[in-house]
Image (cartoon, rainbow, N blue to C red; front, side):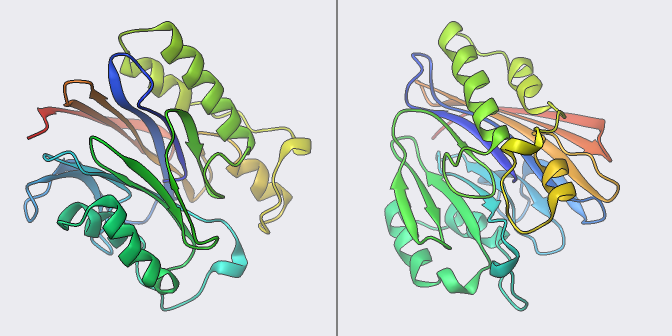
Length: 254
């Protein structure tokens, strides 16, 4: 993922509200969200190149999502696929705390990443570049390609819009959340971060929804977990910025 707007444990009707975009090269083969044939407990899309995923949830209520850490200095060849970080958590019996302790011991096996891991009771963030673990506090948060709640323009904008919408509505409309993350407006130059990719690329990457010649937003996900542990999962997929398909799933956590 490259943008995850979420609210944790603050809304009267929902434990977890997520609106997120996955940005990737268009040529990278990807399967849309589904319950995996090889792991039928997991609901997630799948990277067909490395067989990992960027966001998923299990029937037992384990949740994880991943973003890259954008810094050319933290890229290296031969590292393991970051998509396995999410998959490994969803398939393990470890608690979120236990899994992050194991992950911390292997943090240098991967290029820079952020990961959210949790269940129906707790949610954590971990960044391997900064080696920081945070238990998520109730409220609205944003995660892009720096660390939790770093005030990049699209993180600030997304948090503001999500907070205003959820505060005013007891029942959440997925279409409203999709509208927040379909915003393709680039930020002004004065507010852009400097992550080592050059000004023109910073501009292109500053939009919540990215559309470039070879890279951009491939899918958007809305996930709702209510106070009774009912889950609704919506995924919209795109082909070079144009809507392609939508999938919806509903289940109650076992």
